[in-house]
Image (cartoon, rainbow, N blue to C red; front, side, top):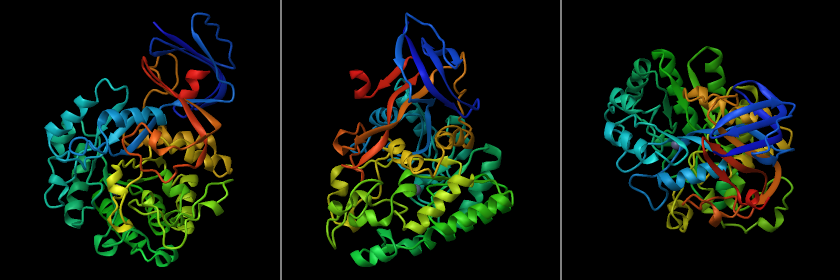
Length: 448
Ligand SMILES: [Zn+2]
């Protein structure tokens, strides 16, 4: 029976509303004692002097691509779970764009079975349409009964408005949200990055902001008409954010998520001109006409005005969820010209460090950031845990909000080494993730 005492730690728990320094004793996979202000005496426990560190509920990711079944060269459920623990995530929602797609009862059950015993709660999202082909509705009731927590054709939009309307109608009886990847293919076709000054300079065909906005407006209209439960994936443009803000003010049942990369990186990163706060960017300029395929993602990294609009919506509560859109790829998927490269960023392990930039800049409260990674997503998909309270099963992440570390793509536990942050310094590091009796420790913790 193992005991761990987190002593003098800043406890941030959105579930209980606590944001105070105290002691937390984890005893055989449960929270045995919680004392705000400290004072727990547990001589038989491993004592972690956690002053200056933060203990919060484990993070919840509503948007993860685990690639299994069918593309195990990019990721498996097991390697994705390991990456999740390293990033502080204890709940993952697995996207259904696998091969075959998660559009049948057996496929949903298989993912759940493969995820057992990995220490991370992995819940599948069912496909909206059969084979994600956008032609015929998948059996939503059967998928819900098998354990799907939402429906999405993510990676592809549901281009038929009639079919999306039907999916939203079904979301009422199932009670499960429809996650929409909002992209008008007639506008985005052939594009590889955000359409703007940088795409013009590089000569890379662009994806206009309107490709997202028109689809967001369509889906909001459908949700308003049907009363269906709409969740917008990876929102990235100012126009879409405006539509979302207006719809929520009217009481339309719509939520949205933003990704770390859309909140922190701009289209300048595509050209190799990106730099994080405090980094010299002069030596990162790789020259005109060069590009970095690890920045290719869908929706694309946008220009600064769009990034600011998404951040404003995260700050004012219009957006209540940060999701990673973790999209691992094999090296060959990215070692090619920009137009041919796969869309996606491996994001689970860099999410916290990247997002902490917003806190260090004074643009987001740490308390609010924890909410956006825990209770915000948890309540959006009905996945909330118990939080940090005595008797609850341990579901915790310990992180140092200030510790700097250099991202090494090759060292990621994910099979996807595709990160535009390789070589960059982040400030904020996950040290321990605890799920029941299972504990992940970062290397730095082993040396302590
Ligand atoms: Zn998507």
